Length: 167
Image (cartoon, rainbow, N blue to C red; front, side, top):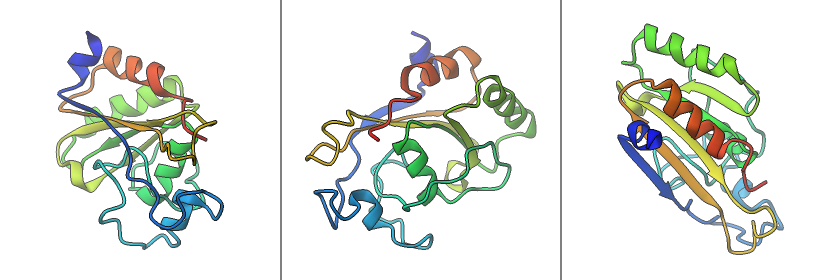
């Protein structure tokens, strides 16, 4: 399938449950990241993150050329974002393709560099049932790590997961 073409490495991974308040009464995942400098070790089950602990305020939606704090970007995922991440060794020509892809349908899509990816691109999303969320169900993270841009495969990922966050 096209997703298999995209998914040089594709995972569906449950996020780690909230550490401080699994009931959600006092913020659930938001309570785990009280500052934008909270250490990220142990916060996420994937890198880049595809769900889990995050800062209480999400990032302003957009496509960025400088890295956006992933502690905020995960909050965008919680609200249905498909995030395009790319490493510092990805060519400018490929970043231009990613930006053009973003511009085709920017609603619910986010783009940001991510140092840990090197020469790779990743797509992430966090899906879940809003009714069950905070009741011992934390949704599912989706991540595809890719070596190149593929318009058809990226569009299928976006179509499959955008707007399906747990909140």
